Length: 503
Image (cartoon, rainbow, N blue to C red; front, side, top):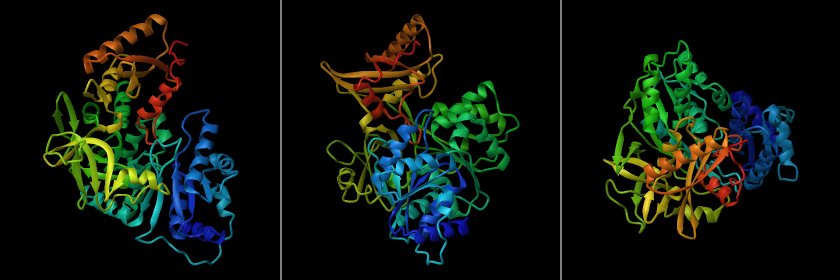
């Protein structure tokens, strides 16, 4: 791969791409991604990993998204796997990208004997688009030294050793997939087997089968990944899998659900899974990836706060300071919810070419994460996004409480519900959007009644309910998380009022 990457770098330099210019790479799970990413590094060119299309019939939307990302990063080229090369070429029309196409397009460039000019410690490393920003892409300026500080801290905290190897289905355009299962293993010289996210979505059991076959010790997933394989196993348990090899089953990228982890552990205990392998973590792309981790082979623990159980996300990496602040900006003590602020060697210098957006989240070296949480004996507990918090008559309501309770109803599944609030004449109104099965009017009326009663019992509030077809779907971020802000924008625009489940 180094030989191929260096040849790729020479071709970029020979084609006149200057040091510091940007190259978009469609981050599908294909060998060309690694060649292009590391090749750009050797050429002093900034890679910009971007997502693959989601769903059928999304070609026009995806091309427009690529075009916005080209503009946001001022990229001079875009490289894609063969099946997406035409998308890349179309998106590049009328932009600054003068090179666009498959790997073959770039391999056709002259490979001249030019001197490589790799990026060094104090320089930029790549541009990471924050998850979910499709209408107004926001690129995060990832620096070499800050990335390495994060990787070094993560490797130490996870106690990686010579016997470790990994398996991952995580997308390479997301920080947990790119850093966690490409860059960190490269730095630690550990082997990794990669499964494309679409293959995982089609047959989730492939993930566990690959771990079993390769005797992998490390994997990672958001909660929904563990939930999906556990639910599928209720009807079809994967044959001949042995998960006794797993020593680190990381969880991150979304609010961690303890019942999901418990269900996974119970389901796969007969296959050798040890729940002590669970390793909760917390982080975000603005910190490169991880900020806090639990203890290796220490399992997960919960902390009850009010009526809720929250999973504890461990201690912050060495060298990082974390403050939890109240509305006045003062740091709060143990077991008081506030907003998380972080300072340390992994914190981004800012958003790429976005000084105003940078100024909103960075002040005196402190990053406003936008997340809420509290201290639990020196460990971080995350309770949700500040902007998603529902406040009714001065009372705080976690949207996840409403969503998880609804998703436990018969014939509904995880990811089917989205809760948020909107301003109305009488104050804040709670709105619940639910992806529903197709049914007749009587069935849907009964479902609506069950949802209304569930919300009343869970949160003590009335709500407006909109049932939508699963074909229409709820908006997700690039990492597969529910985007409540985009769902709310769609609701306000009237998109959901005409999408009924009865078809």
